[in-house]
Length: 596
Ligand code: PEP
Ligand code: MG
Image (cartoon, rainbow, N blue to C red; front, side, top):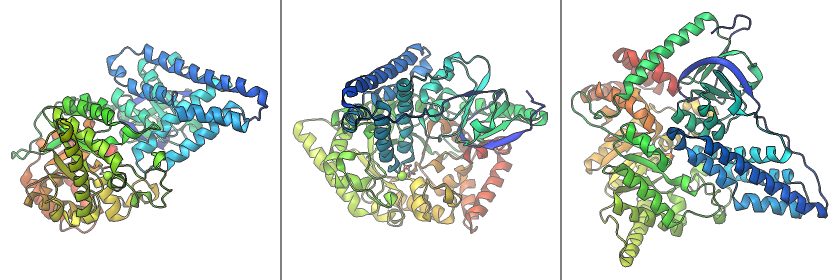
């Protein structure tokens, strides 16, 4: 498919969902509706409130209609996203505060809603965790739907899209993504969005190639332009010439072969040629991700981030609710184990009832275990929920952001209190429950030998370890070029932690993003790690490379790279070696591109 008249152009965005597709552009208008600001008189208040509640009801109706149309089981698994949107439409703060603003400020419904959404957005902005911050998008999708229903502007109906077109939009909601799946739309691109938005998560699980965060797609692409989406590299080609089209057709053919082949490794043992085993764990945020984890060959849940349970709500999740969620995870993964991490909020702002002041450096502030220790009641509720679930399978508790011995002892003391309470109440739990420490602060890595005597396992959180060791804010794009997993300091830290753990007879895992990179497998082997935990999708390809590698080669490689002085030298050396050793996997730029 070639467009001879226009000139070729290449855009770089964020690779949200892998796959290569070509097609004609179809622009969908999802721009923000302009919000009319009007003052009203007292007698109009009741009518304005009615208009607002009608728009809420209409929005709910639209979402329920989308749900009803979905028949495919694969898509139905994602109902929870539409349910989250429906829950937002039930949110007391959103509804009551907007009604109150209409009454007290005497303003129209759009203006009132605009003010409340602004406040909620500010609260989300203070959250440091990227995943949680992205949940703000769900709130804004819902807000846009209400605004449209208030001002009477309908949506461009994605249900009416016909033919093999690539959808181009400023932004798309998860509901839009489901609709595109129903209509077999082959791919989409957007101006905004990130890799961990629900839209991107859905696109990945539904297998719709997508590039997001292109910034200028809707202004540069014209309807009917020919587009190529490369969801591996995060690039979009507008009006490709013939040679480029052919190049991508060939690239797609080769990648499809590789992908099909790599899935075969999902159920094979994660073992090297010379018999060394590394356990493959799955990182999950939602219990709904369990089936994917199992089908992709996870040998346990290596990290369940519990933060999502606390989100999108005014109240806190009860012990019973937490117990039920944790129980479904341990039962779902049985007989394997599930590592469940206690709350890791990046700053406490969204738990508004706690009202701590705005922090200047939230990454260095009241985060994770520090917050839990400051709020022992909240912490204990979570620990009781975990303990109760431990009676139903193999559950391990993981404490995040441990910086020293005192913290781990305090956390364990509260765990002991929770155990005693449950024992007194005659509630069963696993009395030998294992507890672990995340090693993600340099101080913890330095005293790993002492920490190892306090816990049953270590899980290295490289996402934060790199941030804190190299002083690189992990969410600041201006310094991202310095975020180097293979920095000699990081490799030395991991090595020290593994050695300290093994001397004390405990296992050491990596659960940061770095674990999913197949190019690093020989390094992980050389370092002697016991487990790698990652997003389930990546497990088969990591297994594939692991099964063709050897422990001895890993040891040798580690020796060689320990003589190199910079992260760039190490990266080049490892890349070159992997491209030579696994030409089919690495020379295409397949794995490398996804990492970029
Ligand atoms: C990490 O820091 O590597 C980690 C796994 O935790 P999170 O990404 O949730 O901070
Ligand atoms: Mg972390």
